[in-house]
Image (cartoon, rainbow, N blue to C red; front, side, top):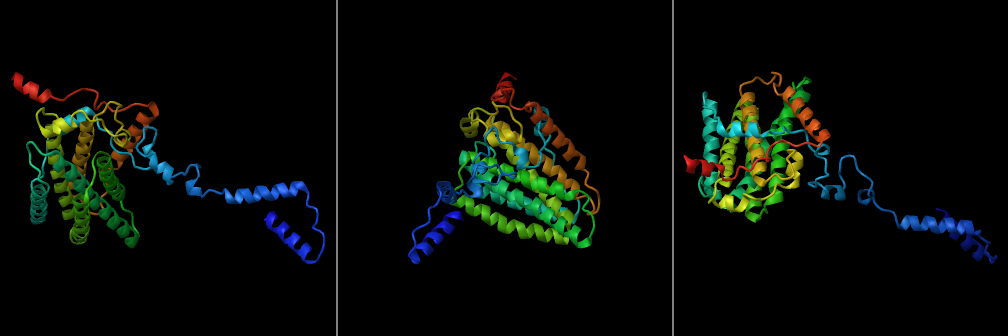
Length: 347
């Protein structure tokens, strides 16, 4: 700007053999200031000016801290109470296949489940801690695919037919995001090695075209398949929770007194003293909800209105009120570790 102009003026004066013009001090100071500002310019992404979508690196680094507000990044999830989770743990409902398509996807899902158990070394009793760690990472990366693919198909269908979606897309995207939050929470607790990362990529490569094909041929069967997938997730989480709360098991020794990560406390509105087992219970409850939602969608026509719309509104209202009041859910307020074994011994 002004600095370049003055340099040009001085150069022309010297070339003509003239004495340099006297430049007032105020202009010299302005030129130096402009030159200094140009050299000190900071890129917007690196500045401390807040971004409305929390898109800057320093804001991303704060994700998971207590002061981070998850409403900027995620949809409102259902905030589970201790009573709700206890009821679900006592009632592990499973759908019985009725039609040919039900039986086909049921056989496919439980065939994958047994193969997955064999690959990960998972067993129902005294499960090795490492086997559960990488099982949860692969499971959540796997479970996050169907909801997003189904939402994409519903979105394109709505655009293609110039018609409404009747509320399905939001529920499917919320499911996909919830599974991704499960994965991000697990990554705060575990490390993923090369084998785990390979399994994650392989599962996504296989799962995406399979779910897409089912959605094209028979959307109801795709939702039934996801319902069965969520049933296996419920079984896994219920078993893991039981082992963590049972003294003498490897999982109890490793996880019984581990604190919940901050990302989980923020997302599920857990109290400060929440433990990792409380997070596992919230993830279990989420999977139960996904199971019920997809089995419901499997019985509906594509143009039926979504029956879960009002539930999303109630979830958002509850989360907002808890946040506004600075309150948390009652999960984790009671110490339950060892209760089962002691009560069993007493009987």
